[in-house]
Amino acid sequence: MRGRLIYLMGPSGSGKDSLIDAARQRLLQELNCEVARRAITRSAESVGEAALGLSPAQFEQRRGEGAFALDWQANGLSYGIPVQINEWLAAGRNVLVNGSRAYLAEAQRRYPDLLPLLLTVRSEVLRERLVRRGRENAEQIEARLQRNARLSAAGLDASPTALMTLDNSQALAATVANLIALLRCAGVSAEQGRT
Image (cartoon, rainbow, N blue to C red):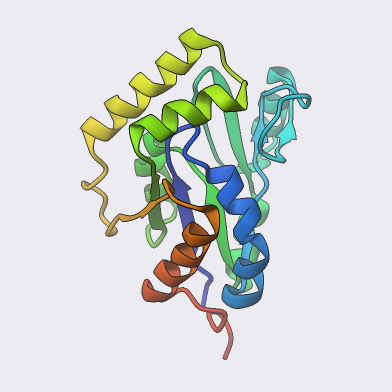
């Protein structure tokens, strides 16, 4: 039995990176779930996700070599999920990826049984987090907030797989516990892929 691909999405500043870091150990120990490390064309000096920083030229070279199972562009950056996820899934391991809402349809086309999970946060909390993290200027923050509103308005409920939502407006520990419980309710378990 193959593992399950968990496709975590949410607006910039919703706390995806913090949630992934806080949940990583429990995901692995309790749900046999690996977390894929993304490649991003963002400076390695940038604060945030422990991603593989690549120049645009390096990213395109790796993409051309087939290094990514999934890749997309958003907010002026390129993102790639390593092809290693296919090995983990084939070996029966569950895999969580930090994905993009705008890329969900293509990800589902490639992985029809993926489990889409939308991390939400109240708009006032989102704005505060974007300002506090200091990665973007005021104009970029407004662009990210507008993108969030546009994608939220478009809705993701056309997904062929039921979309699960997880609110991250509260304490991180509560969100981690809710994530694990939500994934268990969706049938994700450490026993997947084992006989």
